[in-house]
Image (spheres, rainbow, N blue to C red):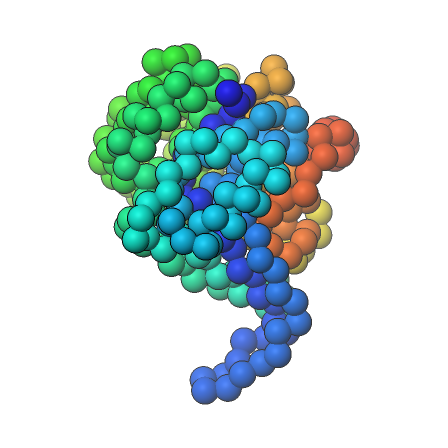
Amino acid sequence: MADVVVMGVVGRDLVVAVDQLPAAGGSVPVTQRLEMLGGAANQAVACRQLGCSAALLGVVGADDAGAAVLHQAQRDGLDVSAVARREGADTALMVDVVTADGVRRLFEHVPPAVLTRAEDVRAAAPLLRSARAVLVQLQQPREAVLETVRTASAAGALVAADGSLEEDRSEVLGVATVVRADETESARLVGRSLDDVTDVVRAARELLGAGPAVVALSAGKAGNVLAWRGGHVLLPHLGGPPVDPTGAGDAFLAALVVALLRGHNPETAGWWASAAAAATVARLGGRPDLDAAAVSQVATESRTARAGG
Protein backbone atom coordinates (compact mmCIF):
# COMPACT_ATOMS: atom_id res chain seq x y z
CA MET A 1 0.00 0.00 0.00
CA ALA A 2 1.12 3.59 -0.65
CA ASP A 3 1.03 6.87 1.27
CA VAL A 4 -0.08 8.72 -1.87
CA VAL A 5 -2.11 7.54 -4.87
CA VAL A 6 -2.16 9.66 -8.03
CA MET A 7 -5.05 9.16 -10.46
CA GLY A 8 -4.63 10.49 -13.99
CA VAL A 9 -3.00 10.03 -17.37
CA VAL A 10 -0.09 7.59 -17.35
CA GLY A 11 2.14 7.89 -20.39
CA ARG A 12 5.40 8.90 -21.98
CA ASP A 13 7.02 12.34 -22.32
CA LEU A 14 9.18 13.07 -25.34
CA VAL A 15 11.06 16.30 -24.64
CA VAL A 16 12.80 18.09 -27.50
CA ALA A 17 14.95 21.21 -27.08
CA VAL A 18 15.59 23.54 -30.01
CA ASP A 19 17.16 26.97 -30.27
CA GLN A 20 14.08 28.29 -32.05
CA LEU A 21 11.03 26.98 -33.89
CA PRO A 22 11.40 26.51 -37.64
CA ALA A 23 9.64 28.68 -40.15
CA ALA A 24 6.80 27.10 -42.13
CA GLY A 25 8.21 24.31 -44.25
CA GLY A 26 11.62 24.56 -42.60
CA SER A 27 13.55 22.53 -40.06
CA VAL A 28 15.89 23.14 -37.17
CA PRO A 29 18.35 20.84 -35.36
CA VAL A 30 17.38 19.32 -32.04
CA THR A 31 19.87 20.30 -29.34
CA GLN A 32 18.66 17.82 -26.73
CA ARG A 33 16.17 14.94 -26.57
CA LEU A 34 14.79 13.19 -23.49
CA GLU A 35 12.30 10.37 -23.05
CA MET A 36 10.70 9.82 -19.66
CA LEU A 37 7.54 9.07 -17.73
CA GLY A 38 4.82 11.66 -18.10
CA GLY A 39 1.41 12.73 -16.91
CA ALA A 40 0.35 11.66 -13.43
CA ALA A 41 3.67 9.89 -12.97
CA ASN A 42 5.43 13.23 -12.48
CA GLN A 43 3.34 13.90 -9.37
CA ALA A 44 3.90 10.38 -8.06
CA VAL A 45 7.66 10.58 -8.66
CA ALA A 46 7.81 13.93 -6.84
CA CYS A 47 5.98 12.48 -3.83
CA ARG A 48 8.37 9.51 -3.84
CA GLN A 49 11.43 11.75 -3.98
CA LEU A 50 10.10 13.80 -1.05
CA GLY A 51 9.82 10.72 1.14
CA CYS A 52 6.32 9.28 0.60
CA SER A 53 5.54 5.95 -0.98
CA ALA A 54 3.44 6.49 -4.10
CA ALA A 55 1.17 4.57 -6.47
CA LEU A 56 -0.37 5.27 -9.84
CA LEU A 57 -4.00 4.74 -10.81
CA GLY A 58 -4.54 4.93 -14.54
CA VAL A 59 -4.35 3.11 -17.87
CA VAL A 60 -1.69 2.28 -20.43
CA GLY A 61 -1.99 0.35 -23.66
CA ALA A 62 -1.09 -3.32 -23.97
CA ASP A 63 1.72 -2.19 -26.28
CA ASP A 64 5.49 -1.95 -26.02
CA ALA A 65 5.23 1.66 -24.88
CA GLY A 66 2.93 0.65 -22.04
CA ALA A 67 5.34 -2.05 -20.92
CA ALA A 68 8.20 0.48 -20.99
CA VAL A 69 6.19 2.98 -18.94
CA LEU A 70 5.39 0.40 -16.27
CA HIS A 71 8.99 -0.76 -16.15
CA GLN A 72 10.27 2.79 -15.67
CA ALA A 73 7.65 3.52 -13.01
CA GLN A 74 8.71 0.44 -11.08
CA ARG A 75 12.36 1.49 -11.35
CA ASP A 76 11.28 4.81 -9.82
CA GLY A 77 9.80 2.94 -6.87
CA LEU A 78 6.16 3.48 -7.81
CA ASP A 79 3.39 0.97 -7.14
CA VAL A 80 1.76 0.22 -10.51
CA SER A 81 -0.63 -2.47 -9.33
CA ALA A 82 -3.59 -0.16 -10.11
CA VAL A 83 -2.46 0.68 -13.65
CA ALA A 84 -4.65 -1.21 -16.11
CA ARG A 85 -3.35 -2.40 -19.49
CA ARG A 86 -5.96 -1.85 -22.19
CA GLU A 87 -5.94 -4.16 -25.19
CA GLY A 88 -5.93 -2.35 -28.53
CA ALA A 89 -5.10 1.03 -26.99
CA ASP A 90 -2.08 3.22 -27.64
CA THR A 91 -0.25 4.41 -24.54
CA ALA A 92 -0.51 8.19 -24.07
CA LEU A 93 2.26 10.34 -25.48
CA MET A 94 3.10 13.96 -24.62
CA VAL A 95 5.58 15.82 -26.85
CA ASP A 96 7.20 18.83 -25.19
CA VAL A 97 9.04 21.20 -27.55
CA VAL A 98 11.08 23.80 -25.69
CA THR A 99 12.94 26.74 -27.23
CA ALA A 100 16.11 28.30 -25.84
CA ASP A 101 14.13 31.13 -24.24
CA GLY A 102 12.15 28.65 -22.12
CA VAL A 103 8.92 28.76 -24.13
CA ARG A 104 7.10 25.43 -24.32
CA ARG A 105 4.78 23.94 -26.93
CA LEU A 106 2.99 20.81 -25.77
CA PHE A 107 1.44 18.21 -28.08
CA GLU A 108 -0.66 15.49 -26.49
CA HIS A 109 -1.92 12.16 -27.82
CA VAL A 110 -4.21 10.76 -25.14
CA PRO A 111 -6.64 8.32 -26.80
CA PRO A 112 -10.02 7.92 -25.06
CA ALA A 113 -9.18 4.26 -24.48
CA VAL A 114 -6.41 5.15 -22.01
CA LEU A 115 -8.55 7.43 -19.89
CA THR A 116 -9.46 6.01 -16.49
CA ARG A 117 -12.90 4.44 -16.18
CA ALA A 118 -15.05 4.01 -13.10
CA GLU A 119 -14.46 0.26 -13.18
CA ASP A 120 -10.70 0.87 -13.10
CA VAL A 121 -11.20 2.92 -9.94
CA ARG A 122 -13.42 0.32 -8.33
CA ALA A 123 -10.77 -2.33 -8.96
CA ALA A 124 -8.29 -0.10 -7.12
CA ALA A 125 -10.59 0.58 -4.15
CA PRO A 126 -8.41 -1.23 -1.56
CA LEU A 127 -5.41 0.86 -2.60
CA LEU A 128 -7.40 4.10 -2.39
CA ARG A 129 -8.84 3.22 1.01
CA SER A 130 -5.37 2.62 2.46
CA ALA A 131 -3.82 5.86 1.16
CA ARG A 132 -3.14 8.91 3.30
CA ALA A 133 -3.61 11.19 0.29
CA VAL A 134 -5.16 10.82 -3.17
CA LEU A 135 -4.32 13.25 -5.97
CA VAL A 136 -6.99 13.40 -8.68
CA GLN A 137 -6.52 14.91 -12.14
CA LEU A 138 -9.92 16.38 -12.90
CA GLN A 139 -9.42 16.09 -16.67
CA GLN A 140 -10.26 12.39 -16.40
CA PRO A 141 -13.84 11.20 -17.16
CA ARG A 142 -16.35 12.44 -14.59
CA GLU A 143 -17.46 8.94 -13.52
CA ALA A 144 -13.87 8.00 -12.69
CA VAL A 145 -13.26 11.30 -10.88
CA LEU A 146 -16.40 10.90 -8.78
CA GLU A 147 -15.63 7.28 -7.95
CA THR A 148 -12.12 8.25 -6.87
CA VAL A 149 -13.04 11.22 -4.67
CA ARG A 150 -15.95 9.37 -3.08
CA THR A 151 -13.84 6.33 -2.22
CA ALA A 152 -10.88 8.37 -0.95
CA SER A 153 -12.92 10.82 1.11
CA ALA A 154 -15.02 8.06 2.67
CA ALA A 155 -11.78 6.46 3.86
CA GLY A 156 -10.58 9.74 5.38
CA ALA A 157 -7.78 10.48 2.92
CA LEU A 158 -6.55 13.93 2.05
CA VAL A 159 -8.11 14.51 -1.39
CA ALA A 160 -6.25 16.88 -3.72
CA ALA A 161 -8.23 17.96 -6.80
CA ASP A 162 -6.02 19.14 -9.66
CA GLY A 163 -7.54 21.16 -12.50
CA SER A 164 -11.09 22.26 -13.24
CA LEU A 165 -14.45 20.72 -13.94
CA GLU A 166 -17.83 21.93 -15.10
CA GLU A 167 -20.08 19.13 -13.87
CA ASP A 168 -20.34 17.90 -10.27
CA ARG A 169 -18.32 20.91 -9.09
CA SER A 170 -20.08 21.14 -5.74
CA GLU A 171 -19.60 17.46 -4.90
CA VAL A 172 -15.89 17.42 -5.72
CA LEU A 173 -15.19 20.70 -3.92
CA GLY A 174 -17.25 19.48 -0.99
CA VAL A 175 -14.94 16.53 -0.34
CA ALA A 176 -11.61 17.93 -1.55
CA THR A 177 -9.03 18.92 1.05
CA VAL A 178 -6.80 20.71 -1.47
CA VAL A 179 -7.67 22.33 -4.80
CA ARG A 180 -5.02 23.47 -7.29
CA ALA A 181 -5.61 25.13 -10.65
CA ASP A 182 -3.62 27.03 -13.27
CA GLU A 183 -4.79 30.35 -14.73
CA THR A 184 -7.23 28.90 -17.25
CA GLU A 185 -8.57 26.30 -14.83
CA SER A 186 -9.05 28.87 -12.06
CA ALA A 187 -11.29 30.99 -14.30
CA ARG A 188 -13.33 27.92 -15.19
CA LEU A 189 -13.75 26.92 -11.56
CA VAL A 190 -15.32 30.26 -10.60
CA GLY A 191 -16.96 30.99 -13.95
CA ARG A 192 -15.33 34.34 -14.67
CA SER A 193 -12.04 35.89 -15.77
CA LEU A 194 -9.45 36.68 -13.12
CA ASP A 195 -7.57 39.83 -14.08
CA ASP A 196 -5.21 40.46 -11.16
CA VAL A 197 -4.00 39.10 -7.84
CA THR A 198 -6.95 40.62 -6.00
CA ASP A 199 -9.32 38.72 -8.27
CA VAL A 200 -7.38 35.49 -7.67
CA VAL A 201 -7.50 35.96 -3.89
CA ARG A 202 -11.23 36.57 -4.09
CA ALA A 203 -11.68 33.43 -6.19
CA ALA A 204 -9.63 31.36 -3.74
CA ARG A 205 -11.79 32.60 -0.87
CA GLU A 206 -14.91 31.69 -2.83
CA LEU A 207 -13.64 28.16 -3.42
CA LEU A 208 -12.74 27.76 0.26
CA GLY A 209 -16.38 28.46 1.03
CA ALA A 210 -17.34 25.44 -1.08
CA GLY A 211 -15.46 23.02 1.16
CA PRO A 212 -11.68 22.69 0.61
CA ALA A 213 -9.27 23.50 3.43
CA VAL A 214 -6.50 24.77 1.12
CA VAL A 215 -6.77 26.38 -2.34
CA ALA A 216 -3.82 27.13 -4.63
CA LEU A 217 -4.51 29.20 -7.75
CA SER A 218 -2.04 30.51 -10.30
CA ALA A 219 -1.73 34.29 -10.43
CA GLY A 220 0.31 34.28 -13.63
CA LYS A 221 3.64 36.06 -13.52
CA ALA A 222 2.94 37.22 -9.94
CA GLY A 223 3.18 33.64 -8.65
CA ASN A 224 0.54 31.52 -6.90
CA VAL A 225 -2.10 32.48 -4.36
CA LEU A 226 -2.42 29.97 -1.54
CA ALA A 227 -5.45 30.44 0.69
CA TRP A 228 -6.71 28.61 3.74
CA ARG A 229 -9.31 29.29 6.38
CA GLY A 230 -7.87 32.23 8.25
CA GLY A 231 -5.24 33.49 5.83
CA HIS A 232 -3.62 33.61 2.42
CA VAL A 233 -0.21 34.28 0.92
CA LEU A 234 1.08 35.23 -2.51
CA LEU A 235 3.91 32.81 -3.28
CA PRO A 236 6.32 34.27 -5.85
CA HIS A 237 8.00 32.21 -8.52
CA LEU A 238 11.37 31.29 -7.03
CA GLY A 239 14.68 30.92 -8.85
CA GLY A 240 15.65 32.31 -12.22
CA PRO A 241 13.89 32.19 -15.59
CA PRO A 242 12.59 28.66 -16.28
CA VAL A 243 14.50 26.36 -18.59
CA ASP A 244 11.24 24.48 -19.20
CA PRO A 245 7.96 25.31 -17.40
CA THR A 246 6.72 21.74 -17.86
CA GLY A 247 6.03 20.03 -14.56
CA ALA A 248 5.86 23.15 -12.38
CA GLY A 249 2.26 22.52 -11.39
CA ASP A 250 2.85 18.82 -10.77
CA ALA A 251 5.82 19.48 -8.50
CA PHE A 252 3.95 22.29 -6.73
CA LEU A 253 0.96 20.09 -5.88
CA ALA A 254 3.05 17.07 -4.89
CA ALA A 255 5.22 19.08 -2.50
CA LEU A 256 2.19 20.88 -1.07
CA VAL A 257 0.51 17.57 -0.27
CA VAL A 258 3.64 15.95 1.16
CA ALA A 259 4.27 18.95 3.42
CA LEU A 260 0.68 18.86 4.67
CA LEU A 261 1.01 15.13 5.36
CA ARG A 262 4.12 15.91 7.40
CA GLY A 263 2.03 18.20 9.58
CA HIS A 264 3.22 21.56 8.25
CA ASN A 265 0.77 24.45 8.26
CA PRO A 266 -0.60 25.63 4.89
CA GLU A 267 1.76 28.58 4.52
CA THR A 268 4.85 26.47 5.18
CA ALA A 269 3.51 23.83 2.80
CA GLY A 270 3.03 26.54 0.20
CA TRP A 271 6.67 27.59 0.37
CA TRP A 272 7.64 23.93 -0.01
CA ALA A 273 5.47 23.82 -3.13
CA SER A 274 7.12 26.92 -4.61
CA ALA A 275 10.59 25.57 -3.90
CA ALA A 276 9.77 22.24 -5.57
CA ALA A 277 8.32 23.97 -8.63
CA ALA A 278 11.39 26.18 -8.96
CA ALA A 279 13.73 23.17 -8.84
CA THR A 280 11.69 21.38 -11.51
CA VAL A 281 11.53 24.22 -14.05
CA ALA A 282 15.29 24.77 -13.75
CA ARG A 283 15.88 21.68 -15.88
CA LEU A 284 14.59 20.31 -19.16
CA GLY A 285 11.53 18.06 -19.03
CA GLY A 286 8.69 17.76 -16.55
CA ARG A 287 10.29 15.02 -14.49
CA PRO A 288 11.19 16.33 -11.01
CA ASP A 289 14.50 15.73 -9.27
CA LEU A 290 13.75 16.71 -5.69
CA ASP A 291 15.44 16.31 -2.33
CA ALA A 292 13.29 16.95 0.74
CA ALA A 293 16.09 18.61 2.72
CA ALA A 294 16.95 20.94 -0.16
CA VAL A 295 13.29 21.82 -0.75
CA SER A 296 12.82 22.56 2.96
CA GLN A 297 15.93 24.76 3.04
CA VAL A 298 14.96 26.79 -0.03
CA ALA A 299 11.42 27.16 1.31
CA THR A 300 12.66 28.43 4.69
CA GLU A 301 15.19 30.82 3.20
CA SER A 302 12.69 32.20 0.69
CA ARG A 303 10.03 32.71 3.32
CA THR A 304 12.51 34.44 5.64
CA ALA A 305 13.73 36.69 2.84
CA ARG A 306 10.17 37.68 1.94
CA ALA A 307 9.36 38.45 5.59
CA GLY A 308 12.52 40.51 5.91
CA GLY A 309 11.77 42.42 2.73
